[in-house]
Image 1 (cartoon, chains in turn red, orange):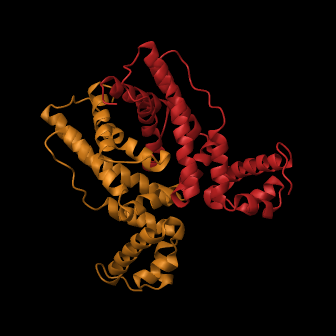
Image 2 (spheres, rainbow over the protein chains, first blue to last red):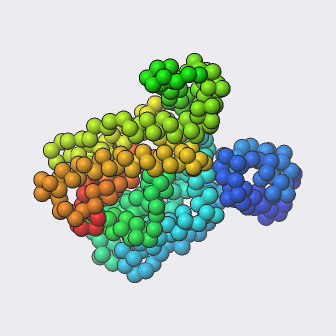
Length: 193
Length: 193
């Protein structure tokens, strides 16, 4: 296959990435196969094998792409409002079966593949760094002391939601999101972070 | 196979459960097979298939057993000390490859099996209820207002640790455990829980 930037090679990559998403939504991580991704993408399976090798690489590649995609940082005017918006977005993603398929596949893939693990770590590091902007803005407004660890405040906002999703299996709603954001903020104001 | 309480049937069950643990530690969830569990347990594979059917049932059964096993609730004399002890235990479990194999397998299994999902939910509900005793004791000592949701305080203590383990892949240490416990307690004292 000859590669031309933005040409056939880029189209194949986009098609394979879209097919990976679609297959994950339909069949989950354990049902994902290179063959089915190739068929859905309309690409020969040897092409997929040559460029992606395994399903964990397909997943890692989709994650790298998501990481590099713009994510609109909330800006509600208050830190509490912004943290609640971030938490609400997690709740919305995980109550939509089409949206939750990807992070669920990623968590599974990362438990079994070094490549997927690295992609997951990079993805969440990038998202946390972006989300921390809401904290730094609040610090510039004088809403929160400069010494508070902005990324840690984002972590504590999201952690109780992911804990329910992947660990305890308890239900998730916007009350949970609000309480989670407020608890993180209370800890930050108490000087723990 | 004839079944006698405490006899051959119970011995088979114990052997299969021990073999499930050992296989998970060695090969992980994706490497777990009914055949290998049977071989390691010294039991005919048709026996294992008849009683457990699939690897997800094997995992769920091991989890049911763990749930019914006594778990020593910390009692350090202060609520902060107890919450830190609970958090430290999570850190210790997940920095030991032999101990982390089981919860990692359970998280994966629960994403793919209703039976494993139910067992996981029951396990964590039972553990949280037990751990909440440290909060209720503190409430009886007058260390914390009666209105604080004891289980929610336990959740917030553990959530940031599991979030690092399963979601972000960030490192985990006893400083993280301490900060996590203190943040949860600060939120409780601020009246958010």
